[in-house]
Image (cartoon, helix red, strand yellow):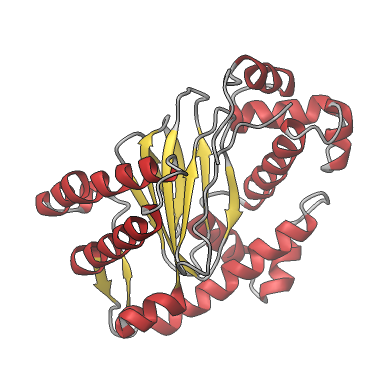
Length: 297
């Protein structure tokens, strides 16, 4: 079964910034990860989703933009499997932005909490940024346009300029060292769970990795990853199992065993908890929602 995912990346020899066009009818859950780029995502047409970024969880859907600052752990959990979908991500390498705006290390972007924004900021999202992303999506579908790379380069600079001018917040004095220490701990936890999610990861294991007490570690994981330790490990395991299932790495029982579940029934219970569907129902959705045409590009 072929996953209908359309991704376009601007080649590095033309531009240092990555554009990704998402057009998928599969359950598009992005597992927890982090990187040293600034990422902004625009949901042009997207079902309700829980987005976790920078230690907080947000409900996002069509018409919303969200960002991940460099080294922020982030993930997306889509709550429905409703086509059609259209979204654009732009990833700005930190060294690239630093070359244009040296003060980038002195603050962070704040755009995810729509209720905390001013009326002017909300207008800028819908009147200025949203049309730029819509145009970028159109360009990435027009592979024959010889000028599309020039226009995409212009768009990414306009988006970056708007973000820095209107959504960049300087760090508060005295908070930088504490924030860096927290980032390092979150990275250690994410990397450990990613390497051991098929095993029985315990709170004590993470305490040993980060040299923290049980009580502090439990509160830290909940505050910075949005789940209990068991809930977070379960989410990572379920995301990997879903990916294996829809990519055809084995039948349902084989996928369950591959991802550390004691059996298919256990995997289905976790799938229902995180995705609202069993493995069989997820596969049926994939089959029913396949598009009758091939993607360009």
